[in-house]
Length: 264
Ligand SMILES: Cc1cc2nc3c(=O)[nH]c(=O)nc-3n(C[C@H](O)[C@H](O)[C@H](O)COP(=O)(O)OP(=O)(O)OC[C@H]3O[C@@H](n4cnc5c(N)ncnc54)[C@H](O)[C@@H]3O)c2cc1C
Ligand code: FES
Image (cartoon, rainbow, N blue to C red; front, side):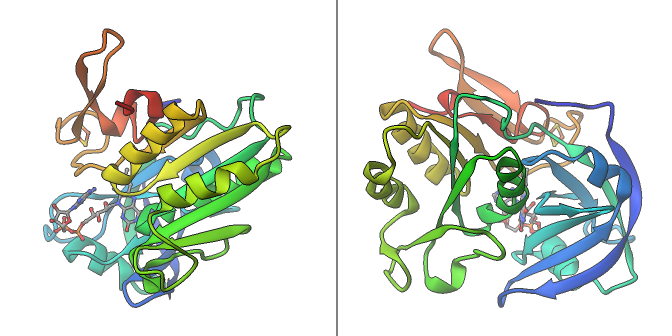
């Protein structure tokens, strides 16, 4: 669900930057209004520098929320993420949010949530896990990466792992792990899948969930500019009700969408 009336653009103080792997850091930001309004799956658009380099803001999922703070889990892949991963305590960044749609955790139709993530797609899962668990539902995390070093379990609970090279957990993709785990759920459990990761992984999860009639939300990725529906930089094609394709702006109608819109 998209809510726009609670969006703010504020200068947030960096409370802490913590490196959790060679390329990934968790940045804690003091931004009370965003923390208060955020829902799991929402993202923020951060101006990582006060100079024009880089000019555009960068989008990041809200990894966690604690009181007046939000955490961002950022992977350094270019100039913007590198600057953010190296921000120092006490410095400030402009943060616009909370933006986009959120995972639908309100449905009474599931009692077990399967959180499927790949690579940095694990970023929104802690906030999601805490929200689902607070509703008294069971949570299981299936986490994938190319190698052991790419697995980002952090503070997540009840985790099972898949690596392409078999260096940790199940050897194969996280979608194959999901297929492997499915028979282990009891009949009385009603399941819903929540997924975030590279788009090809999400397409595979969506196809799997359609085949097995599992409810599923996916959080997609695209390059973004404004984050609020102005620049048209984030258009992606999804299925339309007539069976054709339609274009949506991912920053407004996403990043979280019903996986049915993706499944082929
Ligand atoms: C809704 C949303 C939530 C996100 N959440 C997180 C998060 O929690 N943690 C995190 O580390 N990253 C997240 N990302 C991705 C992050 O925004 C990009 O990695 C970042 O913008 C790259 O900026 P840069 O200046 O470091 O690299 P750039 O120089 O901008 O990009 C480096 C390379 O990565 C490619 N690229 C950039 N952005 C994306 C993208 N969104 N999808 C695919 N390829 C891309 C570029 O084309 C280029 O080849 C999210 C993206 C979206 C859209
Ligand atoms: S990022 Fe500008 S319209 Fe979506």
